[in-house]
Length: 455
Image 1 (cartoon, rainbow, N blue to C red):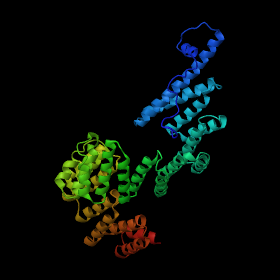
Image 2: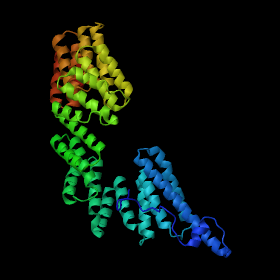
Image 3: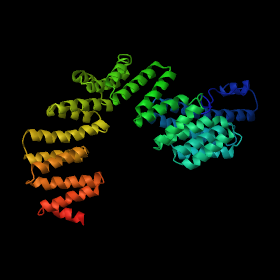
Image 4: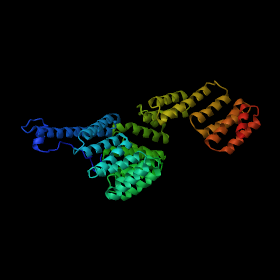
């Protein structure tokens, strides 16, 4: 979509140069001089080439908006190829600046921002009176932003805002959005707060409200996030999108521990949109679990079965339920399901780590190791597999307290020292533990290593 109008400036039909030209383009022979025919043929040829470039570009935009990025790319490449042909074969035609702009837009939509910026700059320099100069300058600034050239981009966009004050909302919105994309979440949110106050009638107002809601949600500022999601709900007219917003608000309430409120809001959407059911049942499962309604929670989680991140999360929660109830075999099966459904997702990775813990617990149940070894290995799983360092410290301490004469006691103390030094950055506590190793277990390899580190 164009940033200046609702639709990009593209030719949707062949221009009526004259009845004679239109007739000739339809290949109807006319009794005129050969030279005139050549002129008309050339005009038709370069227009047809550029017309086809625009068709490819529009197809690329349509596919991209549908999320089919891979299919969109060849369309943009074809648009670039046809536009370049117009420039090289007919450099004096009336479509050259159009072709330059279309090449820049195609590179921009593909994410090749450096190349896009260079074509927009070329258009400004070569065709300073072109009708595309304003958009070219704007898109150049945006391409530079996305290419990480923040300083140069700001200069271009601020200059543009000074020349064309009516573009102030476009510039300020994209600068705020870029701050968020660059990881400066708070800075971007502050800029958007100024934006929505200054430009309440901007065409970017609605998107700014959405970005504020999502931003506060990521910062876990739940009250502010809910406030902005409600504001978005009020200005959104599409029923399905309003249902999605209800689910987002329900999720915020569940994350705040307002389980009954979250469940009530999620239930309002129940049965309305089949494509939202998995998200809905996942939320209901979390809400019921928080309310202590285990049967309802398991029933809801079991409705989420797809090989997606949501499917992996649902299986993980079921696994955790069985693990807490000491049913390790069934818990292991659900963790394995989560891993299979979407291994690279957050909960797929969590499930893989819990599988390591469960293996240790199962072996503990089967009594394959000594009590000291089982407890130490359990601490190792929390430390190395799960990254749950506080739990690991407690278990290492338990090994030392319960089995001080075993070979595992010194190793447990050394692991504690490692966590304090490397993870918690508490060198003083780490040093105290290493002194204890040297004093109490002087003939072990851990005492030798502790001496080296103390020196």
